[in-house]
Length: 448
Image (cartoon, rainbow, N blue to C red; front, side, top):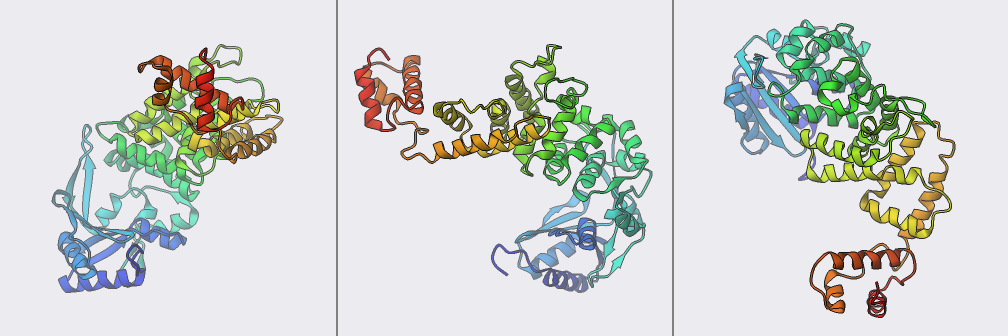
């Protein structure tokens, strides 16, 4: 096993079995690991539920045998986590838990194994595996796994009331696994939608589920289910506002429908799909009633910024998404008549996000009846050509200090104006892409 390679499964089970034997503990592997093992999907993290014995003691003994750091323990909840290279192993004593109406911290009490399983989110996550690798299915989870259906162990109203985040988890599982929701789940979600908000559920937990939905193989399905369950207006009100906003021209759907198709056509990259989700979010506020949405890219960038700040995305992630939203129309409006300077400006303005921008443009066009999608191939070829120019015309060749020295002026807006003008002249091909050539041009054009 390499320093950063996950511990091999057989070795992991052997250590767990020895730790349990040493302490006389009876424990089961439960949840996602068991589910995904039966589905043939990778799942590196393990959850163990201790039926007889103490979970914290088992975690400590396991960490010793595995040569891992001491476990991180949560005494109040009776849980512990052991971190291994590439894996996280969590230990919990069989328990029941529920949330008070105004709290995001669950009330926890000891319970039997069956009670513990019934308090879990979906039957497919109640499957058990012992430390020998044998399965046990007390609540019919394997049948639901084979039928590809998501069902709650208890009445869904109770299951979702106990932890409202489970509503989002159900939709995320549907998007990840391609499973259907049992008929009683969506009505229960509608009834409990108000519970899916702070302080009961933290913004961070909501955002994490949204991220996983967007990265899933079926992000469009996730958004459709959020809408069907009336949860979209709770977690993404900006996107819900796009429903019913009519479009003309080459568009075949309203803004919401077009957004879903665009997200579906975007590569499975979180920031690309987030940009696709928000690319037309400015249209409801800029709609003129005649099918035009002038300035929607700027309005949309600001709305996306506010939404992602609310969802606690990082500043870097927000900058990437807002740049893509702000620029998303530029490739779509490309014409063969563009000068090389115009192509260079697009490459410069997109910077390291150019590939994501082009992917977004392709998805945007694919989500409509646009008649010339092949024009993006021409634009891509021209972008490749200007990006490969050496020396590059896209890199700044002169500093503000150079300008102040040459002109004998102090810092201020004039320095920035001159610098921008010189960069534009280089991009347009009027000045060679050479630092000395730029300085010479500055010296010989005092009217600049």
